[in-house]
Length: 316
Image (cartoon, rainbow, N blue to C red; front, side):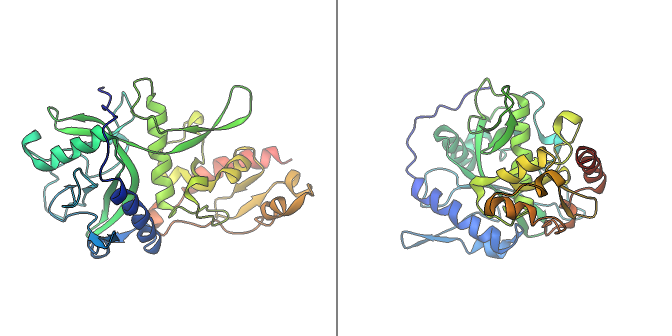
């Protein structure tokens, strides 16, 4: 896999920063499922209206920019052919060697200007917005994503997502591990694979903690219900968006969720007496998990039952 030749300046940085802030606001307003009419309204920066995307093209470069701003895949209409292999994100779309997500380029190779615009974004390591079609004229924005590898001869690019996961260190302490170097030659399949799982899970929950409602993206993680080490699939239905604090409590079996989406707090935690933060955790007992708007993204009950049985066993 070729490493992107980072180091080129990005003259589009001001627009990109504004675009990412604007698409987050739009995504929250529409609970992560943004209608095309709202996307086409664009956003304002430096007194100008800038567009997010274009209906006709999957790779979009705004006229004020020198490289691509976004990429898009739609939902094929009934009876129409599926032209691109990336029109559905699932495990088959992830490269088996790298864990990166394949995105098909426009036909025509580097003679196509949109492909060249994407190549320019790759050279700069520039963040992009990925609009994934979830219904006709409805998109779920995933951001930021980056081009980790650009393969015009093969007709596709490989996508990485900026994210982090909470991991158990060798010392036994829980640590936050960055995913920003997803393009590195030494990056494993697992890290990229889990970064996509975490990103898609957080998007499904509209970037809010399912326990507390916390909306701060930097403090959120897409957590497995059934751990990856126990064979849990990297599926949104095996994930819950939660804050780093709630994730540690969840993995320590101090809090859990039953198959009816009720939150439980362990007796060990209930017995502790020390301040407002702890009180907030204890007050979760008996509350309902904040679920995604789309029922297809709700946790599978069998995954919750497996995890909840471990919680009950540890709380005896």
